[in-house]
Length: 281
Ligand SMILES: Cc1cc2nc3c(=O)[nH]c(=O)nc-3n(C[C@H](O)[C@H](O)[C@H](O)COP(=O)(O)OP(=O)(O)OC[C@H]3O[C@@H](n4cnc5c(N)ncnc54)[C@H](O)[C@@H]3O)c2cc1C
Image 1 (cartoon, rainbow, N blue to C red):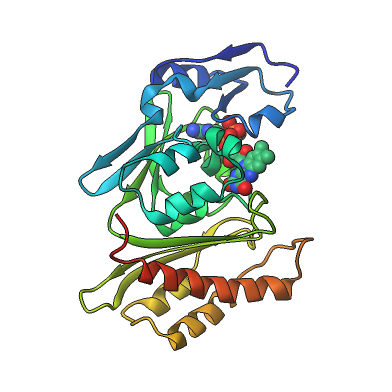
Image 2 (image 1 turned 30 degrees about the vertical axis):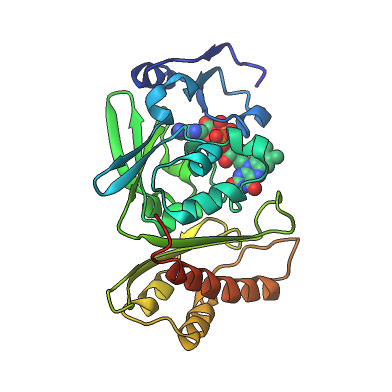
């Protein structure tokens, strides 16, 4: 970024948005990707780390509200009753020094195929607040991820908050990678709401890393509705998960192996989400 003329660290969101409205501005959050950027079009870096409200985790009646600058370490250490799958995904992001820097907003905006956090956020039906100078809008993670999030973020727009409904109390996340600090070969997350009789009233299931972008598995969610957990159910939804899935090419692994990973891990994450019911905050 040889053309950078200014590095600004505002302490209010209004000042952030004022600066982001100027041409050539780039937001920096944890900086783990921005630090590697060589984009000559960037003239001004706007550091989001000076705005206290962006770093908060708040509990409202029916939702958790994450500031965009909440880090993976914050998610691990918070006493707020955040869903288990979110903590599991935060823990799965690389190593402690990286988790200390990487932010929720950065993970959503970066959104490469192996990025871990978008997968549980999709499975939790999270909503993202995006602000620009003089405007703000809410968009579901599902809509934001219809295409790469950078295409849904206009120049000057900043992710400020993430709202997570507390209606899916039981959840699980699994990352499959070669080593603990490696990028994912597969990410899966599920959140379920069980009836008093133990039936799956509602399930949300998301997948990433085997697909170009993290996405929900609508057919699997539909097949789970009203069902009781059983080996037959898990086998059938595991098979269903891979049908119609556009697998991305991965030099590390064959498409047959990817299909097998999907079948096994989708079933496993649903089983874990159901079995976690009652054990989670
Ligand atoms: C060695 C290493 C290993 C890693 N391993 C993993 C891993 O295993 N799993 C994983 O999920 N991630 C991993 N990451 C992190 C991942 O690759 C990205 O670097 C990270 O998601 C970016 O988050 P950040 O907060 O550092 O964002 P930044 O680098 O500051 O920003 C990234 C992009 O998002 C934009 N942006 C940031 N915040 C906002 C916002 N609030 N609103 C709008 N735009 C915004 C920036 O302008 C920039 O374009 C790793 C990173 C490194 C360096």
